[in-house]
Length: 95
Image (cartoon, rainbow, N blue to C red):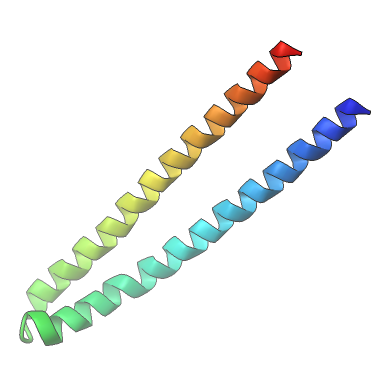
């Protein structure tokens, strides 16, 4: 019975993690589509006084910033998963 309970808990944890990962992916995908476009038009009209080259550079910086943040978040998620697996492995050894 205890093995079945452990498998059930592990399956529930995996489902929770994949739901969180999917939500993060959707958020970053939407921000990658919306933020560079809005930063281009807003910076062109309000920051750079119609200069499209500077506005394009602003949009490029915004897109790259989102990509870097996504990579950083993916690395943090990987580290959390490894720490959780290591902790679960140690708790199994203690039994």
